[in-house]
Length: 64
Image (tube, rainbow, N blue to C red):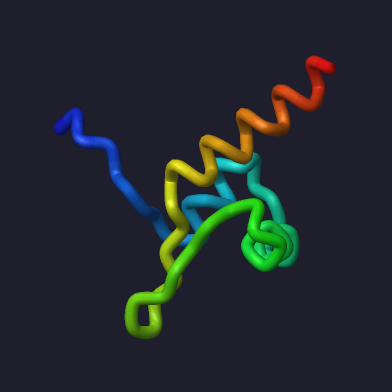
């Protein structure tokens, strides 16, 4: 297995990574700018670093 970390992933994988959140909630995160994404042709890609930053922000909010 490679140690190379992916830069982007498909929305279904992101939903699982976020604890099986709903598609509606994922789109809310994308549309609000909480998570970054882009389209390449007809495919939507989610930026992995933005997922990690989102989770870090949520953890920081809980520690306040």
